Image 1 (cartoon, rainbow, N blue to C red):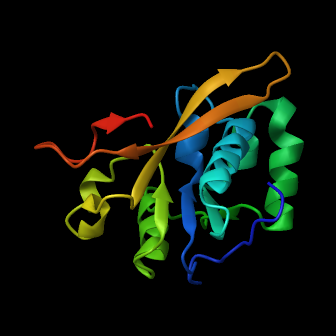
Image 2: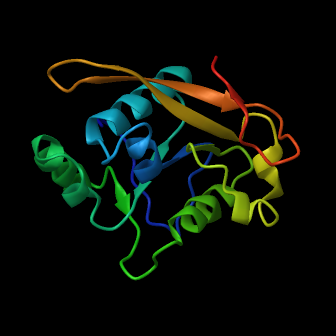
Length: 166
């Protein structure tokens, strides 16, 4: 993932982007794809080259990806390009992502999750441009994945689940 800066969950990402990495890596897949996550981060960086990026993944992420991607995912964890949530906080990954983003009103969250159970606490999720999604467009035979970052529309009656591809 190149020159990403890593942050422990308690640190602050100033004017950054924070990825719900496990969620983005799972989009349209049975098991997560590290290559898909890397592609989504690259797409975000093309649109926001001046922002620091924090990528948060669930415990055991590297062991959940395909065997062909495992070494790359493990290396990214070792380099600090991925921040792994602590074991034993099952179901709190989303909350950790939003806690980090909550520290700076300019931080953009990238996830395909609507964060429905947390919308009441993090009302800024409804602000235009604060929540983006990442959509896989294609995958080559070599495993390379092309992704596009999209924005969510204004919330409808059910929350922020309707989206439009840009």
